[in-house]
Image 1 (cartoon, rainbow, N blue to C red):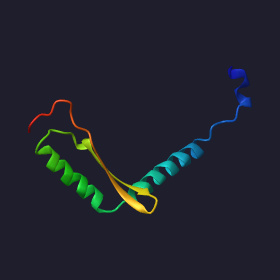
Image 2 (cartoon, rainbow, N blue to C red; image 1 turned 30 degrees about the vertical axis):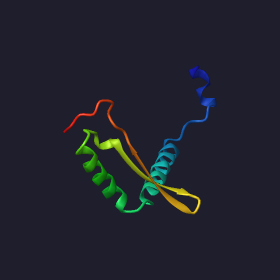
Image 3 (tube, rainbow, N blue to C red; image 1 turned 180 degrees about the vertical axis):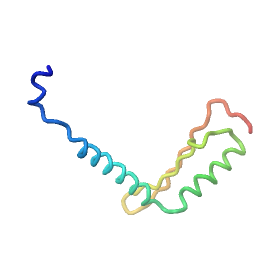
Image 4 (tube, rainbow, N blue to C red; image 1 turned 90 degrees about the vertical axis):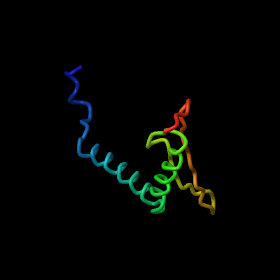
Length: 86
């Protein structure tokens, strides 16, 4: 009903953009809180796994999780259903 559109509050594109930017910044900060060696470790793990199984770049995920007073290294590897030798 275009006749009553003037009664609805208009969406402010600046506030929407601000909220999206805030979300992106929060995600970037959470990613940057990890140690510097995690990307290197991920790359090296991928190289070792590729010696035995053909996997994609996104197959290896390395995260550091806080568990109480401990840091836990969480490594997840998505292997293909049928392994191919490189």
